Length: 124
Image (cartoon, rainbow, N blue to C red):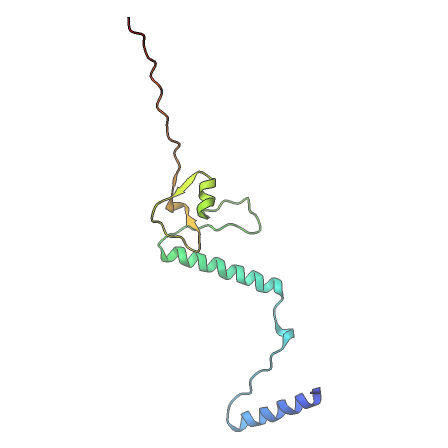
């Protein structure tokens, strides 16, 4: 189909739609699409917003997600294994939001103390 044919069809459809009082649908245009980087950034922002809403539904406030641009900044949401790696244990029965737990759902892991062996005194 040539461009002239496409233009003719567009005009015919536009006239047909105008007779019925409706607007013609807009033609899809690849040039109007967003770049892949922009779509990825928006999807990451959507994921972050979804996480924040999930924690808010659980009543957890003060959630600080990891900064993707500067990973050295502090954050208080990690996975189960992430909390164990920093010396914290997720409490039994706590539910995650997409596999992540807030610091308020964890406790510090305390190393068990070993009892000191009593020295046997010789009987005299």
